[in-house]
Image (cartoon, rainbow, N blue to C red; front, side, top):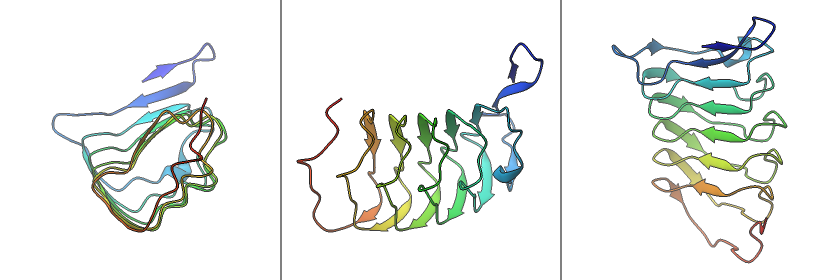
Length: 147
């Protein structure tokens, strides 16, 4: 954990804990001043609601057993990094309304399906990993972000 000048916690990292943390996580109850949350490589499970996050800049849920669908259309505007890989998420993924600051999105090794629209990715997008899912159809690579 780290805190800013006000003494309020702005960053929480529970990554790769020994023994690993487990249980469910209610992301709708996070403190409003939180800017970074890392719960990677634990045994957290269940659905996650990404529609009511505080003003996070980084969210790492990588390598757990979170499940259900995810809504990427209402993420915080300043979110720059989002890692949801190696979980049990499923359903379709809408990449057309991602935050303009997002430069890293990892959805690797889940159970996402459907088609993928890459024509409206944020300009800052530098790393997008969709491997290990069940996406299908054609992909337009002619309109990827250039800068």
